[in-house]
Length: 355
Image 1 (cartoon, rainbow, N blue to C red):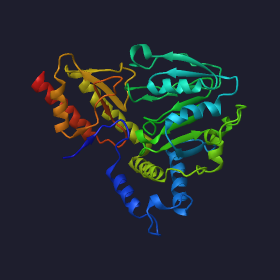
Image 2: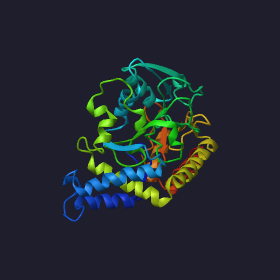
Image 3: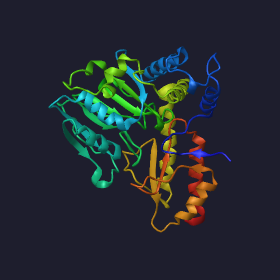
Image 4: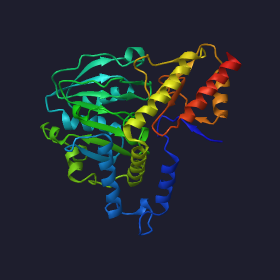
């Protein structure tokens, strides 16, 4: 039976990427070594890192001056890294509180300075992206572009009179945007561009070096720029699989193709949630995520019966996060439209027999 993987992360990967990754574990390059046993400073892996950085830069249409890094870890370390590198001693920054991860980024940034929370949807369990007036002063405005747990996303990315900093972990490489607005973009790979283990940074180096802080070496982005992402041993397998995924996205048509597919998947999913009386969506219209559709059963509906039905259909990973409950269908770049169609058909079948 085909498995339809709606996992919120780690994400689904294309079968051809999985096959190439498996082959690299057995043997990579002319020497006959496995990718995971060769030196990260070998010419074979240095070429992998260089291509991954260049391809990410090309796909996102980043300005030439921007630096791209692939480091160990995830976006949770990026919360503190962003503040260390961009929030001056005695300075202020603005944050929009739109979900669990933005809330955690606020807590980390408050360790280092004054943080203005300019908008929050916490009171309604983060069911929408709150409107706000972008600040005209301060060091930066931090946003979390997509909220995996609650299924919300900025329909239009904000602009401000100050640089933007964005955690794009769960929607990076799914749509185009103007990178010139951003001093820093960071993202864990495991949501939309590869396996867990590496974190992506794209930074305008002209914004670095102005905080007056003594930054710990590992948290200093300039350290990693100077060492070409090789300050310490990088997560070689995660970086390589991310490279394979970047190549796949390029060959599929780049960001425009990913954006078109995301729109088609999410439109089909939300159309069924709205039409089917047995289901209720969590996110408000206008804030719905194209990556993560969150929904629950209507009151009194037999959850056990629906759970059996989707499991029997080969659907995996749609149980909702405990903060929201219900269900969550994560529709990342590699998810085929066929999987969304199977889930929609399963919801329709459930309505026919339990409505």
